[in-house]
Amino acid sequence: MKKPIAVLLVLVLAGGASAGVYYHWFYKGAGSSTSGERVSSDSENAVYVDSVSVLAGLGSGNGLIQRYAGVIEPQQTWEVKLENDRTVKECYVKEGDEVKEGQKLFIYDTTDDEDKLAQAQIDLERCQNEIDTSTARKAQLEKEKKSASADDQLTYTTQILTEENTIKKSQYEYKSKELEIEQLKTTIANAVISSELAGVVKSINDPGSNSNNSDSSDSAYITVLEVGDYRVKGTVNEQNKDQIYDGMEMIVHSRVDESVTWHGTISEINLDKGESNTNSNSGFYSGSSSDNGTSSTNYPFYVTLDSSDGLLLGQHVYMEPNQGQEDKKEGIWLDDYYFVTKEDGTSYAWAASANNTLEKRPVTLGEYDQEMMTYQVTDGLTEEDYITYPAEELTEGLPVIYNDTSAASSSGLDISMDGGEYSDGASYDDTFTDGAAEDGMVYDDGSMDGLDGEVYDDGGMDGLDGEVYDDGGADGLADGDVYDADADVINGLDEDSGVTLEDGEEVYDADAE
Image 1 (cartoon, rainbow, N blue to C red):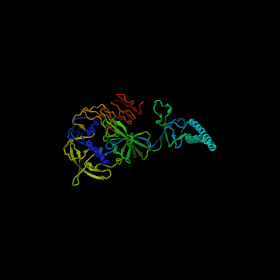
Image 2 (image 1 turned 45 degrees about the vertical axis):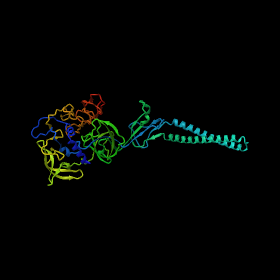
Image 3 (image 1 turned 90 degrees about the vertical axis):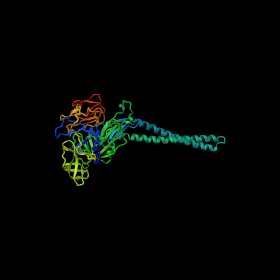
Image 4 (image 1 turned 60 degrees about the vertical axis):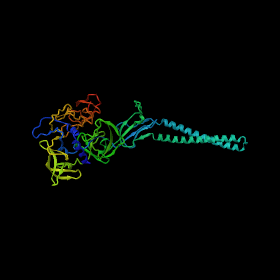
C-alpha cells in the first residue's frame, strides 16, 4: 500500500499547477540569488524536486501519507427512548453518574396501567358471566323446542341462534381481555428500566421541557456511554474512501504531542451513513482530495484500538495508515522508484545541482527493505539534496523548482504577507498577487517553521474559509481548538479572546472566555 500512494503524490506534484500550489504554500521571502543559493525557476520546462530529508522521513508530518481527523468515542452508546404514552415516575441517576450493567436507571409511572388492568379484569368477569348466561339460556331453549308446536319451531330456532352468536362474541372479547391483561401485567412488571451496559450517564432529557414543538419521541431520554476501551471515529471523503479498507492498520497521533501514538485497526467503514458537505476535506495533507467548493459526501469509519490507555473521551486525534513509518533506520532510506540502475550495475538519481539544474547523480545503494520497497543510500545523496521521480523526458540541464520554503523565486513573485506570523518570526500567507491558487491546504505540525498548531483550508478562494485548528502553540492563534465552518475572511487573531471573524461567523475556542 505504501508505494502506490507515494507514486501518486509525486506524479501530482510534478503536474504543474497542482505542484504550484504545493510550492507556494509558505515563503520566507523572495530575492536575488547568490552562488550556490537555491533558486526556483519560473520556466515552463522546470522540473519539481523534493527534499531528500522530507522524503526520507515519510509519514512524519510531511504530508506524503494521508492523514485523517478523528475523535475518541466509546465502543458502544446505549440510548433509552420512552415508550409511547408512558411517563417517568422516578429517575434514580443523574448526568455524569457511573452505572453498572443491570443497575436501575428509572421507573415508569404505572398508575394508568394499573387502572386499565383493574378495568380489564372486570370486563373479563363480565364476559364470562355473559357466556355462562347465554349458554344456560341456549340449553333451556333447546329443551323447550323439543316439545313446542310446529308453528313455534322457527321462533325457538331463531332464539337459539341469537344465544350462540352472543356466546361467540363474548368468547372473542374474553380472549382479547385475557391478552390485554397479560400485556398490562408485563408492562407493570417491567416498569423499572435497568442499564444494559456498564458506563457513564451522558445525558438525561426531560420530556416535559420540550419547548420547540419537536417530536420528543425521536429523542433519547437517557444516553449511557460504555466505559473501558475506546474507539476512534474518523471521516473519509467520497473521493478518497478507496484509500482505506476494513482491517487496515492505523497509527493514531496525539494532537498535543506528535510523538505520543496509539495503534489500531479499521473495524468498520459505514458507507450507508453519508453526509453531504461543501468545502469538505477529510485529510490534512496535500495528498488528500478536495472538491474545490463543490458538494461532496463524507462517510464515517471506526478504528478499534489495541489499547486506549491515556486517551480521553471526546479527545481529538490524527490518524494515518501504518506503513512502517515508525521503524527508525540509520541513514537515508528512499523509495526504490527514485533510482535508475544501469546495465553495469551502477545507479543514479535525478537530483538538483548547485546551479539549480537537473543532473544525473551517481549513488551507491546499500540494503534493500523488501516490505517497504526502499533502498538505503550509502553515498551520493545527503539530506540537503533534492531529487525528482525519474521520467523518460528528463534531461540534464533542465531548470528546477524546489518544493519547499528553502528557495527564493527567480520571478520576483509578489507575495502578500498579511496572513499571520510563525513563532520563529517568519510570515505566512496563502494568497498571491499573481493569481496563484489560494484554496490549497495550509498545514504545519511544528516540524519545519515553528508554527505549533495546524491551519488548513479545504477549498475556497478566500484564504481560510474552511477550518482553523490550533493546539495551544505560541503562534498567534488562541490556545485550544479554534474553528469556523464557513468564515469568509479571518482578519484578526488574538490569544486571549479567540478569533475575530469579519462576518461575525460562529467561533469556538476551548479556552476563550
